[in-house]
Image (tube, rainbow, N blue to C red; front, top):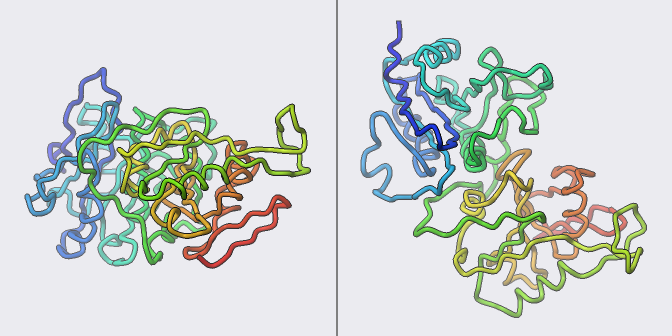
Length: 354
């Protein structure tokens, strides 16, 4: 009989809409593997650990979360050695407190795979009859293997107040044993969140996708980027075009030029973005400004949060319109790391080496 108390489910005020992820360690034979797994989680915002993390683990830094935020609960207690998803789910129900939105078990397979550290994931909400059977985030009798890095990225974009994760349109692995988000771990520069310093503001809510400037060393380069993104593009496809010229279409973006975001990584912007409004984010970072082609970074916030690719400003209108209207998917534009997406108006993929 497993005690419910080590599940460490604190009570939050009823008026606060807080998204909660719970990570439970169930394998105890490899402390080094657990520390490696923990290293991807301990810097995330809203971390509460039982027992508390040593000062050296969390470095004493405070990443103060805005309101309507999320909490990541880490449980490292031998009482849950070899616990199954059913046992954890049952204990959560018996605890009588608010259930976490997602539960992640760090089990033997997590410890045995040093590349992905795949966690066993399930949600605690009831599956609606209309939920597609192929959707990964379903109750505890159906589980998903998710890489710890991908889990971290998913957590970053889950803080908009109780969003139902079962409604997310994530890309399922083709085989049950595959690891969701495995490709993130194989990148030369894989995504990884680092705590924010100070309190940068939330990115603005906008009807149009955000184009955010994070490098403020070259105003002329920035003006050139914005001008190129907003330049009209000729196309003979069936887009909704401005009435004044039916042969032109434009990128509809909300430009954010605020020095408060200077130097922030795209992972930190994910943390601050109104991602329940948009499925992707466009970032103008240092590389955008320094490279004469001005390759912008397009970041996935929806299908597989944390994926990204580079695209020239002239490709943004096609990318923005097609992704916003769900005419095409992120995969249709995504190109490999080290390449730049040149998407011609004729819809011919033309990725070029960065």
